[in-house]
Image (cartoon, rainbow, N blue to C red; front, side, top):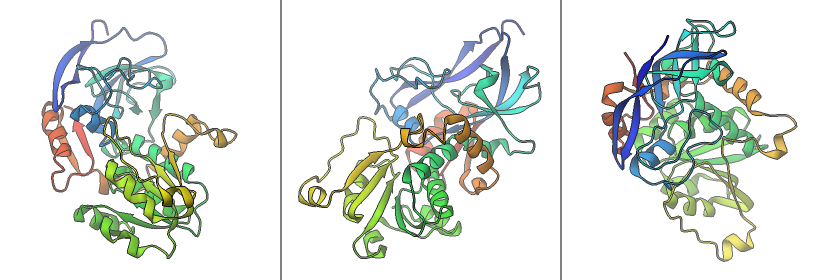
Length: 330
């Protein structure tokens, strides 16, 4: 397979994406050629890319070999490709369906150790939610012991719903909030009580909750999370706000009630879990969850690869019925 080429998606400027040709490297020993079937779009980092709300000199992701460079236009991005191996190895033969943390591209070369082999029969569209499941799993681990506690979850995008479901499975009583009625209705259909943000405080126990998980992506929501906390409560922040300013009321209540703000991020496993968890174990656990979580309900929308600009515009504009978007490849 000499002289292979492909097409990839490039972020060209704020709210402007396009497709461009790219030459593929020669697939050496231990490397695979994968034909993409679907690639998922994240509503966190990718929308910040699309909107131009990231530091242009920030590295894309030093943890993922396919994401070199920075957020300076033009650049490729994305980390959720599901496809079929065209040229394989003994360990990952041709015909295997795999997940890879790779930018949006119709064909790519990747090391066999950098793919997740998906169980036979896995829905490739649903599997584009794998990184979101892994993120939700890390958030649930960072939440710590939640059994018999009430936890508030702010934001019912795909990661918010998945995180709330995992916290519920861990024994928490979850009350979620989102300003969009259709997202609250979807959460309710999945067994997650959900209210409008302005109604959240009234539904919580007197004195507040020990944990709020902030996943809305809205800087204003973080300030609104603090009054929900009990004494010495914690806001676990899974949102990445990029370069958006965040104003917080850190006066008397925050100071005197010993409140905590703590970030969660999926690139690493926290040191306190290091004796039991590492990234390979977390990925195995996330892979097992693909068959246990209601991913079909979250995988709402598809666009052809050639219609990528419409896909990002739909997410950016919060079009009705759009929760998780994937690009579909011929």
